[in-house]
Length: 423
Image (cartoon, rainbow, N blue to C red; front, side, top):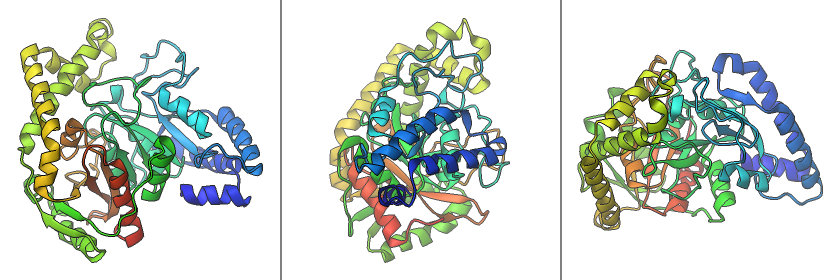
């Protein structure tokens, strides 16, 4: 989508203003049903688009993202706008300055369309957002508004965040692309925290090629071009945890990758999956309790049930238990390069989620297949690879070494070019 928009803007067959108007019209048609937005900045977006029109006419766009719309998850500060973190009554006033990622996007000429809905405090309790394919189903979380807005055509792409599975899971549920970079690759300044050892900033978009454009523009790092590679599948992790709909589909997806030229074989991680989940849970709960220590007692009524449970679990964790969890995380970080060498693969492959989107909106789904990768800080990409027997989208998750973000995104483009990626 983004490459096509850039070509149209460059040859004059369209312009950013027309793109913004089309997005606004789609939002007007669908927002009452989807509930993806906290605020749409119509006037600001049209003004920014008019400036982008001029720059494209003059042949001087600031970047490949010039004039392209982006939604901003409402835990990320935009100067002059309140950051509500998904909680009515939380924001005390407008943000004083842009988050670092927002500042960068303005410099690059991206058009900030508005704030997308997040689950409360970007955690477990569901948001009002509905799944764009089947409105009774969950769109996932916590980047629920970003996922639904992109999937339903409201915006070209959107920012999200992930502490457990908050980018990959909603993207997979909604049939789009979601990328969680390596830990620390995108700046978290001006982003409301959950747990500093786990928080990642990333993005959601329509196609793997869009993800490549965004990454190259934000970082200056060229996305790899791949012809073939070695991928390891985590059959032991999935076999006991994925539901029957996905287990039935798995051999066909693997064969599709092989037919497209990849070498694919089962491998085993040298660390227990449940141990990774346990350490992730300790770090997330303890650090969330620290983040909210000053406000939880004073403003407890603003906290929904799932967030209360997380904080109270964290309050019950001894500092010594947290320190042990930190030590294990750091030990695993140090060992990961050896793991990859021993496995002998370029990527790991598994489902992005244990099942398709829950058929009710009382849950955001299970981050079971995502939280360990957030703990380890490795780059992960979900790409849509069709639908399960229930008619809902499924996502294939690509996992790479720390720092190999460009290679993981290259695998996504390979999926798109070779027909592995489909809706």
